[in-house]
Amino acid sequence: SVDRLDVLDLLFKKNAFSDVIREAQEIVELSLKGMLRFVGVEPPKFHDVGGLLLEHKDKFPLHISRHLERLAAISKKLRKERELAFYGDIDFIPTEEYTDEDASEAIENAGFVVETAKNLIYT
Image 1 (tube, rainbow, N blue to C red):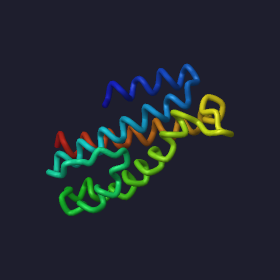
Image 2 (image 1 turned 180 degrees about the vertical axis):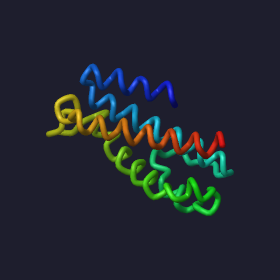
Image 3 (image 1 turned 120 degrees about the vertical axis):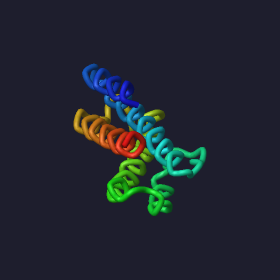
Image 4 (image 1 turned 45 degrees about the vertical axis):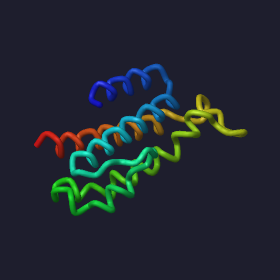
């Protein structure tokens, strides 16, 4: 996922903000599913696994469990944005609607999720 974070920066520099949102969502999803697997929970085949993190909070060490609420909120938000960023809507054109602020937030959140996952898996 660290290499994928570099892709976010490249997309941001190209003003491809909706692509940043989509890629950030995938990074978050993969990282959280990796965290769940690490603690022995097989993740389901849907995109937002934040609720599962909270449900299995007791399986995570304290230095990780204190961040689970934030991780779940990030997952939920990006999951909601995922489809809009991919497909848009009748009055929502992704390439025109997402701003550099939206993309910056997605990059920051994806970085936080990846760092938290690394802290769980590699420490």
